[in-house]
Amino acid sequence: MKTLLIKNARVLLTMDENRRELKDGALYAVDGVIKAVGPADELPHEADTILDLRDHIVLPGLVNTHHHLYQSLTRTFAQDEPLFPWLQSLYPVWSHLTPDAIKVSAQVGIAELLLSGCTTTSDHLYLFPNGSRLDDSIEGAMEMGIRFHATRGSMSVGESDGGLPPDSLVENEAAILKDSQRLIETYHDASEGSRLRIALAPCSPFSVSQDLMRESAVLARSMGVGLHTHLAENVEDIAFSKEKFGLTPGEYAQELGWIGDDVWHAHCVQLNPDEISLFARSGTGVAHCPCSNMRLGSGIAPVREMYDAGVKVGLGVDGSASNDSGHLLGEARQAMLLQRVKHGARGMKIREAIEVATVGGARVLNRDDVGILAPGYQADFAAFKLDPLYHSGAELDPVAGLMLCTPANANYTAVGGELLVKEGKITRLDMRPLLQKHRNIAVDLANKAQ
Image (cartoon, rainbow, N blue to C red; front, side, top):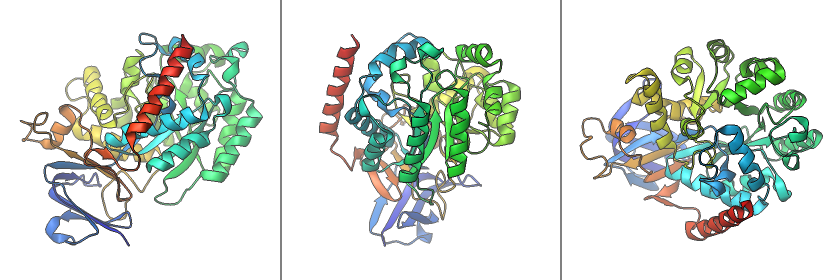
């Protein structure tokens, strides 16, 4: 039996149903599960690991609902392009990825997430050149220790058939479905506290067939896993859907059975009011990726409208080639500010942004064991030390300071009570050789792109 006690937190945000914020808060966990949260004098005073977190804000571990970890190798490419030309310029670069590149990029991307306070992440890998497999990113993630929702992406409609990706990067649909079943049978763990789950994720309406979308949904539901794809990302996306299918993206998703509480869609920048209502009624989730949407000029997603309608909304950093950062706390700040650009100063409140980054993300991924610091939940938390420079003057509301001031790195990040970040450092791997290897691969990809 391993015990953990954190105490004296400046503020501990529980994000429980009462949204309690505990000054001088404490948390006690046994074998990675929270047993008690409250004032320090009401909790046990001894534990195997004790952290005195005075001058820290403690949050539930942040949840990232959409990422492409392999893209950490191609930051700053196609700097001024919208979505479709951006993709078309990067597909040839990504065609040189290898199994080793997939694993290394996953570990670097996950390290960045952990340092931003993220404890659960989804990853969407949809191209598999040169023998690459989803297994490569899974292996990297398991070594890092994060809770990992690995989604088996796919592309099956190439340029010669009217799709966007080059023919060299698409797969046979029967092979996609066979590998999808293999991955679920091999890796998916639906148990409480699981660190590895699988979902099926045909890439987008412009890169897979309707048959693959339907058959993936049938397979996923027969095996009890989730479904994920890109949807309604920008105006080009809308135009393609209307021209190709005679439907808006939301209508297209509904026709194919891609609506329900086991489905979450990335972006949804261009959802209309009827589609928002459909998502709310059906329990369909949305991964909001504000920085990527701004980087590619895709627009401002109607997050305020979705939130008010009851749609499950979580955050996603998206790939590091369209965001160039994997800092999830910074993403929460940006989500809040972007809704204020659209709706005014009250467009999104600070605690609402934190809710989307924690409870909201957990709901999108159908997790009822993370996102909240309360008895029975996993001991997943992030502790941010109030910086003497960047947070000086934020004494009125240090929680607001965490969101409004310069985005901080976590001083501690724990998954199931295990410290994966300790005093600002990744604990499981020596990052120096990993980063050197990552840089070497990135330089090689850049050279091959020329």
